[in-house]
Every structure is written in structure tokens, then in C-alpha cells.
Image 1 (cartoon, rainbow, N blue to C red):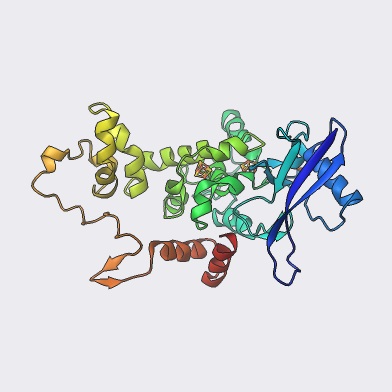
Image 2 (cartoon, rainbow, N blue to C red):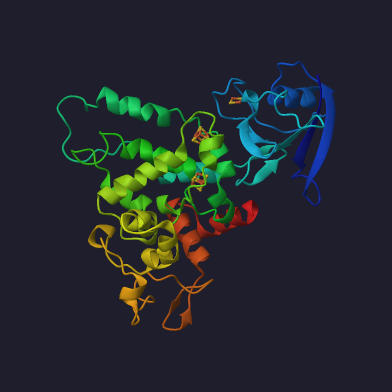
Length: 346
Ligand code: SF4
Ligand code: SF4
Ligand code: FES
């Protein structure tokens, strides 16, 4: 089978490093994967082509990259099924991470964010005399999350990370759910309140826009977005809904019994930003006619003016910078390094 593979390349050793496209024409077996084709190019046509791979069996997670614009495991993707009408396969490095060389990206921020969610069990209270007991059902429930192979495909295509590199991201949040849903984590009832409080901070669970990309590209069926929605449910059930993200997510549920979608939509900014307290204490949000007379929406929880936060008239750091600093603290990175990562990714 004749194929053309158009590869986005990057040589960090060049005098002025910049990405460029290079097309290779070759014949591969009908059963070849995209990774087979890339290895063939490296072995027979251009030994300088850099890529990562190991197991070639969709197990190790090394070979995540974008094929035809979407993140995949190259070893799990048939070349014959990736050809466009002109017989071309387009291959790029994974997104949302700085490129090191050709198809190799820097996973440092990926691992920093995994570490930031403290990926180990944290039981509270006295230790049991025997082992910690976890039911079969709870472990079976977790098996789909523990199937994650840390390939980074979901991070590559996350639409929020593309505009805000401080977002914890789908892989780290799915990993966090693996612990909040574990009955051995948290208090005696298995409630991980401290974790959920941390995950509710800016750049955490409430920043996901539910675009579904991570669910579509995950090669292991982890469905990170569904885990993020489950984290939100856990947080709200603990009364941790006093933030803009929770109010925004809950607004339709609060109003749906009485209002149509068209009525809810224009009220979303007010429901999101101007309600104090938790949602459970606001079963009846103000409607336009009820609030006529001037409810002050610039009080607690109101959005800052575009581009900056103001206090007493003095301009403070931009929202993005604040989130960047918070994320640096959360991931135990220096602010300088976080900024360098942001610049590199952008
Ligand atoms: S659903 Fe959320 S976490 Fe998943 S890719 Fe979209 S924004 Fe990112
Ligand atoms: S959740 Fe899926 S796509 Fe994301 S790192 Fe894990 S296996 Fe890869
Ligand atoms: S080489 Fe291991 S997942 Fe592709």
C-alpha cells in the first residue's frame, strides 16, 4: 500500500528553531499502523526523525501524537484507515505541551499536574486493626479510571488547556476522581472533603467546559470529562457549591422546573456571578421583574472588568496571571517556570 506521511517537524538544534512540514512517500503493508510507518521512515529514509514508542501494543502510552488533527496512539491507529482522499496521513506532535524535537513533547507539566492532585490514598482517622476494606463494586467502578495509561492524548486535545495552561486538565482530574471515589480515601465514610475543596479552586474541576474532546480521544475509555462531572457532583453534595463554576453548572437545574431554556440563557450571568451562598440556599433565583429596582451585581462574586481585577481603583494582576501564580503554587513549580511553560505552549 502506497502512503504519503506529512509530518510536522521541529529541530531544536537549528540556529532558529521553527516548525516545518515534510512529506515522505513509502510503501507499507496493509496491516501497518501509523507507528509502523513512522518507524519505517526513521529506519529507511531519515534517521533524524524523533518520536517516542515502546510497547507498540497500546499499553505503555508513549506514542500519543496527533494524526489528522486528533490525538491518538500511533501504534493503535491503522495507516490504511488514516488516509485522506489523496492518500496522505498528517502527523503532528501532541498538543498543549512544548515540543522538544519533531514528535517528542515535554511531559513535565503533565506530571506536575498529576503530582498536584496527590495521587495516593490519604485515609483519615485511626488505622483499622486489619486491612482497609473496599467492596468489589467500588473497585470495579474504579477499574475504568485506573485503566489510564498516562498517554496525554486527552491533555493534547483539551480545549481549555489550549487557552489556559494553568487548568489541571482531564488526566489529572480523572486521576483525582480515582481517589475521591475510593472508599479508603478521606474520612471514615470515604468522603474526601479536603481533596474536593482543593479541586474546586480556580484552574480545577469547575474550569472544564464539557467539550467532550477528552472522552473522544482517550484510547482506554477513561472518559475524563465524565469523571470531572462526578467530581462536581461530589463537591455539590458536600455543599462546596459556593463558587461561580458550581452556580453556573447548577443554574439550569435550579430554574428548569419553572423556566424554558430561552428564559434561563439571559439569566446565566446573574445566576453565575451574583448569587451569594451555596446553591442549596437559593432555590428561587431572582427573575428580571423581581430584581427591577437595581440589585447590585458588582458585589461579591461579580466578574472582574475584562482583563483585570480591580480593588479600590488600583489595577491588580490580570485574572490569567493570578491563575498562573495559583497553578504554579499548586503544582509546586516556580512562578517563573510556569510562565516559561505557558509561553512555550502558546
Ligand atoms: S471536556 Fe473538559 S477536560 Fe475534557 S477536553 Fe473538554 S474542557 Fe478539557
Ligand atoms: S485519561 Fe485516557 S487519554 Fe488521558 S492520559 Fe489517561 S489514557 Fe490517556
Ligand atoms: S508504543 Fe506503547 S502505547 Fe504506543
